[in-house]
Length: 305
Image 1 (tube, rainbow, N blue to C red):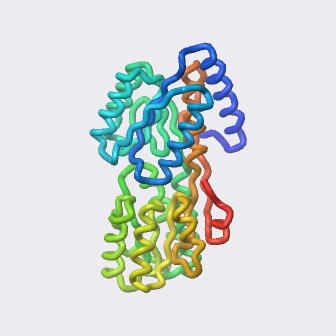
Image 2: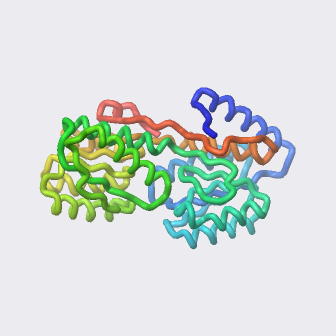
Image 3: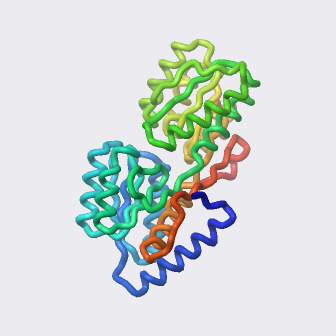
């Protein structure tokens, strides 16, 4: 079930009204948030928005960093259950691997909202970006920048649905350009250092490489360093809208030409609103997709999370 952009504000308003009314008559809510990682400005921004929103309604927050370790994330969730949280916000490091943790949380009577990436199991609601659209936008922009021809590569990431959808969107967009060929897809694990090494290898192995799509800005910054070191004219696009990427795009002659920006603050705020509404008896959408926006050099001048 999808919610259109037009009805989203009213839905969120109803959710917050329900939540705030109930909070005023009950013990302070305790919200648990398990992140797949915190070594990423995207999730740091989301954490800040969570803390701000929780403070505004007098809720307490328990936060855990899974560090891309599904076993740790499962243990973190179990620990939160023991701490008697009311709402679990889950950003899974492995969509399938956390299913048991979701079932445990529901068995304990918690409201479970997945954020950014969905999780298998009885999740009450999922709030996440339109990741397929993000991949389409970034790679369509790259295809046009390459005048519809040339060898390109994909810098992949961990196998969660948002990443898979970005890659799928990218590949579909590039099908519109018959003279563009995807010569390699390699995993940079969404980390700068790993992406740097992987991109160096891709450039060395593919002498005619003209473009690279990275599934996130963290990996893109590593790729950018490799491109600059090579001295080659390789155009780079990505997904996120991270401050560092936005700054890099504005440099004169930058090879980083565009990113499909997400809105992490909006995602967490909507997730909290939906979780509150669910806790106090409302029926909430199973899936709330959040728009993304393509940011190029010109757009980067005024964009921020």
